[in-house]
Image (cartoon, rainbow, N blue to C red; front, side, top):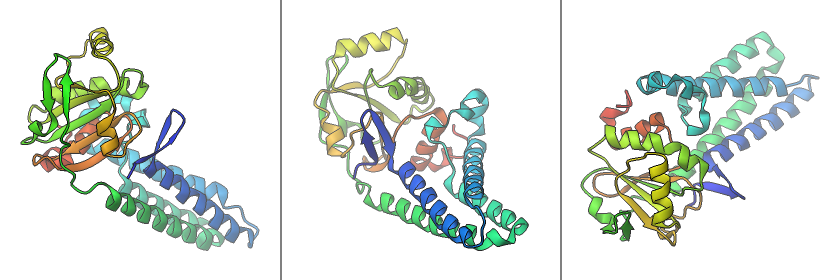
Length: 276
């Protein structure tokens, strides 16, 4: 199943759409229940959301503090999707319970709305997990490399493999390249494959030379066949395969060093805590 919704040039991850849906439900439920008591619940709902997001981000930053200490300004760049969702949910509930102690009349509307929103979000995330392509193997696809070799993707089996679907015209693809290049240096035990979507070798070589990027395994998929095999239309999309060559995860959107470390930790759990 596609992990994003495409709106023109904008790709929205389904996890973000689910969060927005949960917030809308919370606003509607809390608002309707609070109005019966002559109260306004919209402001408190937004405060609970803000606290939940802040806790989720800070928990993720703490988990990968080694990475963020090397580039502290990236803590504020939430485009990388670095969140600790369970921590955020706990933070939202704790703040909601604290808030309702101060205004007892809001207890039932806010906690009921938060409970329903939590169920909707949790069920949606479970559905996304279950609907992800199940342990699909590295595709039987042979691509031309930038140095004009023929490379079969199944040949990367034996090590964890990260396949990045990208294009030079895609701004988030361009932004994440330095992080992927660094990850390639830091993790020689992982195959990093840069599978360009629909562009010419000359165009890609110009981009790499102009940005002084030394990437290994730069391959070409002129008809975007691999993206279609995994039902993905957004760029960048990154496919994570375990050492046996089975799909372990799909990430739609920009990656940072921390989110790369997080994803690699799922393939090699010993690396998850420090981001190394």
